[in-house]
Length: 193
Image (cartoon, rainbow, N blue to C red; front, side, top):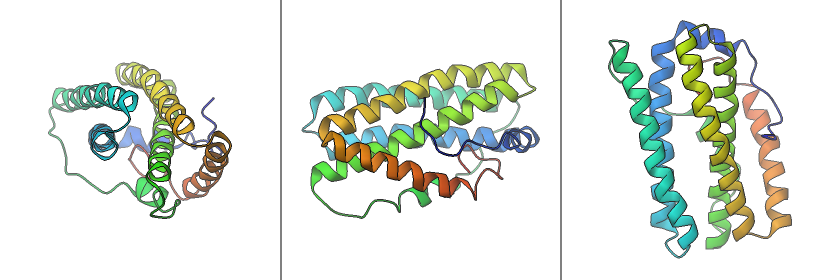
């Protein structure tokens, strides 16, 4: 369903289980960045009222997810760790060239967001199925369902605002590029890395 070209190696869950506090901190910041992305799209593209309405709802939902993850951290007797760079997102953002028309910039940002949400959904599915901690597994199952709808929403908007054939060609090329990135990732206690 997600169209990802390279699935996550299931052994990644072993890394997560040995570093739950680290993965929760990284996950919390991923939710915060997702909310920031929604707000940034509002600020950058105010001329798209349907997109604005969806991004308002998304920013609220993502901050709600941030709170849920933060609450999990606090329940474990920990505090939110320090922010760290997301190697996955940094590498992914190198795919499309800078510049172009406003529409091109919007489509590229929507495709990036769709792919990040798709990978998050795939990782959450893996956690929901493989984590030994059943409470955390259920938590990730619920988030997986939410992430799947985010991925499809971003892709729908990219296809709405861009030329469908061109958007689909770019999407497939981005999926291929992401698969190459993923060959070197999946070895750290991060949601995407």
